[in-house]
Amino acid sequence: MKLGIDIVSDVICPWCFIGKRRFEKALRLLPEEIQIDVRWRPFELNPDMPSEGISRELYRTRKFGSWERSRALDAQVAEHGAGEGIRFAFDRMERTPNTLEAHRLIWLAGEQGVQGAVVEGLFQAYFVHARDVGNRDVLTQIAATSGMDTFDFLESERGYEEVRAEASRSRQQGIDGVPFFLIGGTTAISGAQQPETIAATLTRAMEAGFTNL
Image 1 (tube, rainbow, N blue to C red):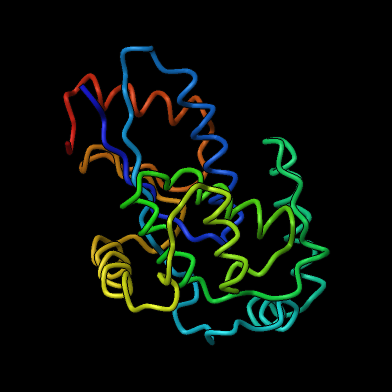
Image 2 (cartoon, rainbow, N blue to C red):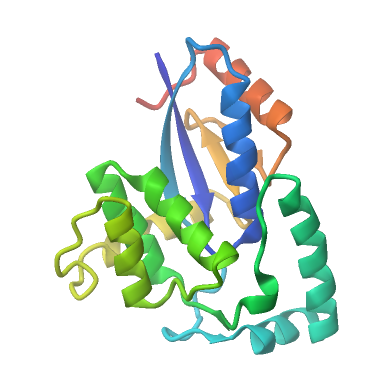
């Protein structure tokens, strides 16, 4: 029996990266008989972001009132990330990208069975290597490294409708922050909870027989 889990996230959300690491730790705490099937669902933190993105300093200053406040918040997140083995490169990140193309790539990765690798590649590219994950050349490189076949995909219109529909469905379900874990279609975990909390919730869901497969 498998437990289906939808993880709603955005690739420029640092807490989503931290949440991914904690989720992975949680899985190692589960009994071996519990099998997990994970699907990554899109959430755009900035759906109105220009397609080319904007200066990160400008974006963060507008959002938090000052660059100094932004840097202080980055330091707090970096401390939590270090505890999960993540070395955030906030000081080297120049742009806040539009993430629609990245979500479209994740959608295709789901069709090809490599979503986990692509999501990890996107998080690593943006947060560790300070790359622009709104750039199609960067996305193509991530796809290739993950073993994807993306021939002409990014130049096509495929996936736009599906990604927008999924993002809209998440909003309609009342999801207004990420990461958000939907377990078996009925149980939810909001935020980057500790591994023990995640593992306990997953175990209870499985014991109750929840599944969406």
